[in-house]
Length: 557
Image (cartoon, rainbow, N blue to C red; front, side):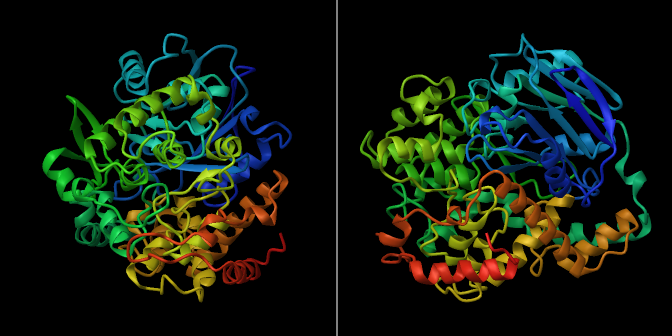
């Protein structure tokens, strides 16, 4: 069931559309139908929340939800993915997707209580931070509701504003919060009383797979359960690919940013998504407040990238971003960019924290920074670390050549998570300094994860040939739940169709081949420090990698 909500006309209806298994593929298909393709990026007024056929099952890794929209930051197609409980609640309510379009006359709240749907007044919520917003909605409508909401950054149309959920889970990247802000949509609250497992086609087979997978996930993900994603900092620092001092160095003093230090000084308890035994989330305490995190990307963005060695500063910045509703990667990136221009000293705690608030409120220099790294760098005349306008995450491509190609071609801009190619590069599965075989591996990984995102399967429970859930088993799980007879090759075929649809939409939005590139400094300036020191990207060899990628995709543009 797909719900269509028109905020301008105050019209709510169910529509029948079916393309792809669900999740990202369905969301892209619906976005193409409802985008104007003529408005400026920040003036598009459509956002789609979508789940997959596995979402809401009582098994680890099946709780995520997609948000699909046109990015006000990049101008291109955007998709942001959130864990927690929102997706499961949508699935229990019986919805594959919720399409919201138009601009409300006044601040509004969409309340979905199973089949009962209403557009409620949210004027009293406008101006509240995301934590208070969630508290107020649950107080008024009930504790069982799961909430996705925006804070001050979204209301003020910061181009990289996030959509927050469960006080620490986010639809983080690409500016979905600004889209909701433009629509005057403060929040979406969902409650479902259905039982997703009652819809399983072959329950006996599903139960058998679930038992096997859960035991394997428990063993494989022990490190994530204890430390969460900050454990990645060891790999990037050891390989000299931890971006530091705004992409000058690849190595940093991580003594107070290490997972053991965080565990000893700040972690108070674990936090899990719906029905997940991994519990990769960590609740930390700082200044008598609780904050979820930090995740690796937040640790990099407010830590090494800003030349800050103190975990407490990272946690304070993390908490501010969660409350204001800001993407931590883009926020930390634009602050570190200013530091690289000597607008502040690297590691300046006061500057980091005050600038976050200025951005959220669009005050002073914050008004410019709220426009995002591409517009900021155009203003200062010094290029920033971005692809298609999206700030790069915490993996330096000069020491991870698969990641170099992955950043360049990703439909949403500089992104690590749509292919996760940094994992085989960091682990040594492929030579991270080689230009050979990267394009073929990238296409395979992108296709697999595009299908996985149609199911909205968590990255932590599946690499196609590493696991803990393997490609063959993804097929078996999907078939058991849906009753279909998918083959492994179909996974990659469907994934390729999703990637091609994203490309088609982006071309209609003005994407050109030259947008599939990297900042010049990666080709011109070598890393200064670490086990990738002296490395820069060979432009000619990179272009050959790109040509091979285009050939494998069958693209001419």
